[in-house]
Length: 631
Image 1 (tube, rainbow, N blue to C red):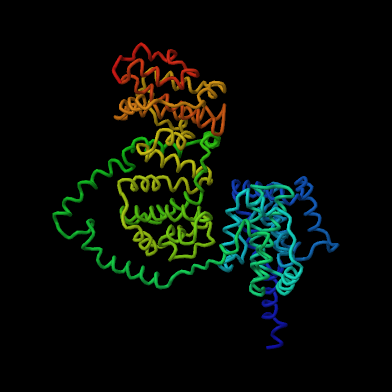
Image 2: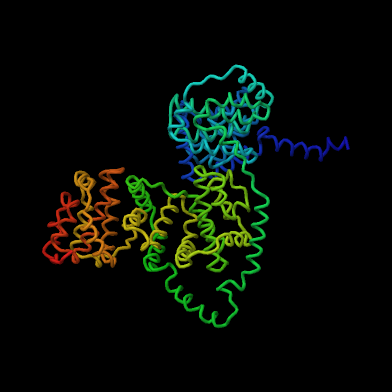
């Protein structure tokens, strides 16, 4: 066999070996990064560049002009003076080729991450993280899936840090010399600690949102120190760990990391037996599969009505929205997203994570071949699990496991973010969906089915849209489906971005005074908004009289129209809590003017006092038409 090594077989083996090491020891990761960077969408690149600027607020690394940075990179790659190693030069050439149509700033940012990845084992954890952190959410690195439970709990605590805790971590500290020497001895034996690297990456993505400059950098270094201690604790005594953890103890108590809660095998067995028992007893217990012919004959009655209203009571409006959102032009989408940002400036409600919306849409697609009841149960299970994954930093392990439901048995979710959960949902097979659906014993099909049908109609379109557009469209569509179950101001907060592009309120259904009022809201000035934002309170008897007047829902259309106009107009004048107060007062005015025919003149004037200074009642022409009724 020896001579063969110099022949064809030897050359093939040598070529394969060279290919597997062309970018150094981390060739596989570097290759994957180059491919992933070339496939990033414009929205994802905006996230990367924003994260890079955020990281630079604590590292204090000046990015410099992007064009000069790219020219310097290209010159270093092409030079033959040995400034760059051969693996680094090859990786740089491959990256520039993959990003040839990208801007200089994007290429320079990707180069920083790529060079850190090539030299990963030779860089300190903090230096690697400073260069790679902008990409960690979109292109994860290997190693984090093998971290021990205590380190995983530590990383969750880092993600959940508040400004106050970051300030505690930023305080100056000094270690006991003996404990410090013991830690350095352990680190010297194992230069590469995954826990330390993971802590550095998460710290640079979390802390700059609370602290910047020297304080932010000090807090980051303290968090990295914690990761190093956890990575080396197997060779440290308990006393040494206690001393080394003193800088972190006020913010992240070490005891909170030591609560090992293993998945109980006995509980899994009991759950499996319970599911099997349910499956065995399901046929005679289910109303949907009862063998009695009389029940089968009676079942089609409620089902036959569903095709006429697949999206629930608001099917006509939802149908119009589905047709309209598909036909929106790029200019209209820009207006929608701008309005969404305006509305968010007063509602202060965090947008639903894109991963949650993508998970729901993936569930709707994955269950398309199942019956409606099963689809509704699976949808409810995914909605609960996705919400739990998005909020797991604020939950205990037991609370997270309860929220995961069947997903906790299918896959380990301890370090899966909500974006990764969406990919997991998309990969489920029919058998997995049956398990997921069984974890939800019952759902209100009349409430959930319209949402599932709406998602089925929108999935093909939203799948190809950027996350921001998909989230905005889904929030508006789901608000429209649940319109009667939401307060008018809540409905307006979700649907207002689309109100002008796809109107859902018929002006003919509004009286002249209501139309004048809505028009006046659209012309509000900053001073008028400030007047509407002033605190006010109604007497109990007056509030009770108004509640009786609107009990039949006759004023809802007017209140919705006023709220839709307010949540778009007011943020252009005032924002924050003052803007939200003004918007709610304007919506209240819509309720009052919409029920004017059921109120006496005196009561109408009393109810109008919070709005009178900004929009006089006389200007709406409502006074002469008011009836003198007793409250």
